[in-house]
Image (cartoon, rainbow, N blue to C red; front, side, top):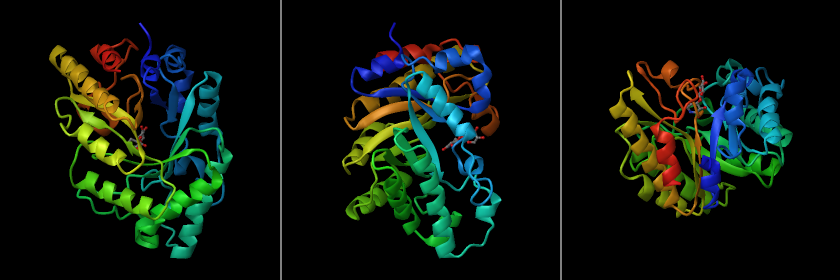
Length: 315
Ligand code: XIL
């Protein structure tokens, strides 16, 4: 049967996967990751983050990110840049530097300009700002917010646009899949940014979901986001279960993946879906959510799970 990206392309969408540098030595793994029929776009899971790219002030390393760009290019795949401004995986020199507003603004702008310029013309999308909100819809009190104020977000987008006029610029977050306080806050922010003519092109919806707990409001919420005049992209989809895995959980997971895919298919500005790695072998879930795992469409032996077929039929 056709691969997931081939199926997604029938409606002008894409299907993609995240990856990470250490996995690229696993040739059985890369044989599937590099198959453009399955994945039309690749996201570096870690190697474009601030700690990886500017570990000390003004010293930039692109090696890890470039390795994934080279891999995708060799296989004719597009790339999502991830990410430019985020509270996590942010070096201590930024979080604990006690910089004043003007200095931190220029540090942030320099980081953005340097990365976006380095890969100018080579990436399809950038997550410019990641996880700006708390779950209650208030702004996360990260160092950029507390030092620069809410304006850090618009400044970040303007800086990215100045460095690459063509890459799609996204704001990305989790727990905004269905409606709720956090989704509303993001909607209101993007509405404000659009009214201010800020160069924002897309809302990235991470999609770290739980088997049996997929919100019923996905489609309505994404249609509402899209009504702001932005694309929506599912950027980090995985659907985890409490271990041990059972047949019933695998069947429910297959249904849940299909629900997410169908919601995207039903929103014309939902441009595509990226899973946060394709195999349980390299998923971030077990290290992050104790007792949970098996969140991906391929198992840890790189075999397709029931979710694979359900995604394929929903595309
Ligand atoms: C995760 C990576 O997959 C892990 O390897 C790393 O240890 C922590 O970060 N939201 C995001 C991603 O935007 O960057 C995170 O990636 C997962 C949650």
